Each structure stands twice: as structure tokens, then as C-alpha cells.
Length: 112
Image (cartoon, rainbow, N blue to C red; front, side, top):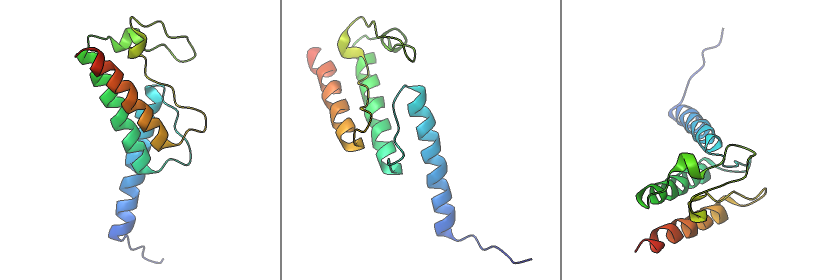
């Protein structure tokens, strides 16, 4: 039976893939579309943008449980700014992250 050598590079790639799968699950649980073309770095950037948006909503007095609709249901937020922007069907990760930053800015700047 041949011995299989696991290189550091292979082990690192396995960890990246596990982390990407975990981030994908987290994004799906928040209702965020993930594309097959998204890299691990794209996923990390999207998650960071989503978490930044959610934090801005919390700091501004929003209730994420009330402002985010269940999957397939229309949003009925206290404030429309508190609804996480939906990602377009073929929207590039970088573009979606930009839109998240804009939406986060709208939440933050309204409170200043």
C-alpha cells in the first residue's frame, strides 16, 4: 500500500476549504447568495461586510430578528435602511461588498 504524504500546502488548502464551507453556511443562514465563482477571500470579504452592516443596525437600535424577513418572505422592517441588501443573481463579490459598505454608511450616517 503506498504511503500518502500530506504536505503543508495540502493541509493549508484543506483548512481554507473547510473555512470557506463554514463561511458559506453562515452566509446562507443570513440569506446571502453565494456563487460558485466566489473565492475564499471573496467569502471572507462578504461575511465581513455583512457583519459590519449588522453591527451598524444593532448600534442604531435595529432588531435584526424583526428587520430581516424569513426566506422567501417580504421584508417589513421598522426602518428600510435596516434590511440587509440582497445580492444580485450574478453580482460580483466585490460589487456586493461595495453595496454593503454603502448600506452600512447609510445606517451609520443617519444616526450622526
